[in-house]
View 1 (cartoon, rainbow, N blue to C red):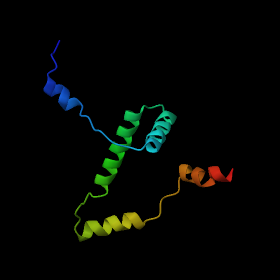
View 2: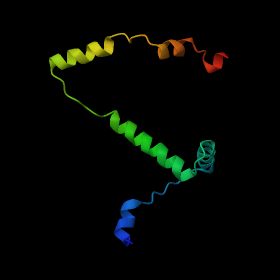
View 3: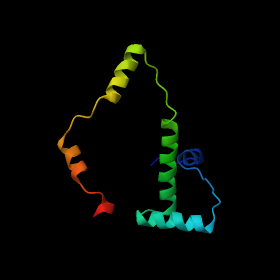
Length: 97
């Protein structure tokens, strides 16, 4: 058996304290329960997703003129029809049912 040092434990988990209003806490708890999660799991998942989104929105990539033209052409090209797209368009919206 391998001994776990305090440094190992510190690297695994770190405590983050937040002060929230009772109203916000209750909202978070209801949302977590609706997904079968506890408050910590829900907040960690939501925080991780928000962090990834924030960083992804700030990613930059460089293209030369030829690469940029190909990139823009790919964005502007119409999507090729397929069965999944046809089914999606034919499916009524939940609020129209």
